[in-house]
Image 1 (tube, one colour):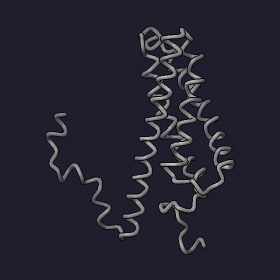
Image 2 (cartoon, helix red, strand yellow):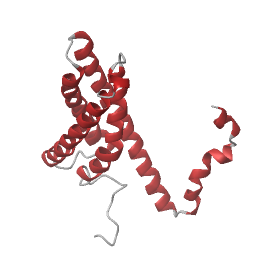
Image 3 (cartoon, helix red, strand yellow):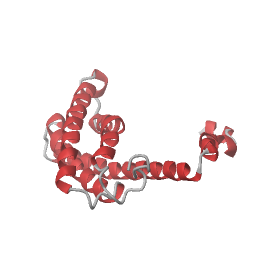
Image 4 (cartoon, helix red, strand yellow):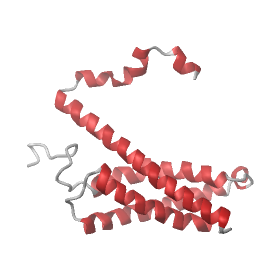
Length: 175
């Protein structure tokens, strides 16, 4: 908090100064991509909330071991993620839902493996394994690492063929 108080408004927006030197179309494209990423983060937040609720219900109410409950929780969150990303984030209503769902499932199967591996490694830590409710924090951290490093970059490709997307429209040189 003290760092934010010490910074001037000009210093806070300094990382955005590169937008001034861009053409208006490049600036628009950058803003649209940032908006798409923001929507993906919101959709991911909703999917993560579903994941955490299912995980907590299975662990706390049904006494399912956290490592076992992790899989159905991820599947529930993944379903929410597909629908939100297709409909709201990437506006891919016109693309082939079969193709998009198939590619999304492939991306998410690998993401599931990454999530499971990272989750398992973190839960094996003696510091984490002896803390009550640590499994929720571990889920938040590991799922966000996988989201930013794997899922989101590939979702942009999965939903690319949607004709009403502006931020990935082909340039005149590609047509």
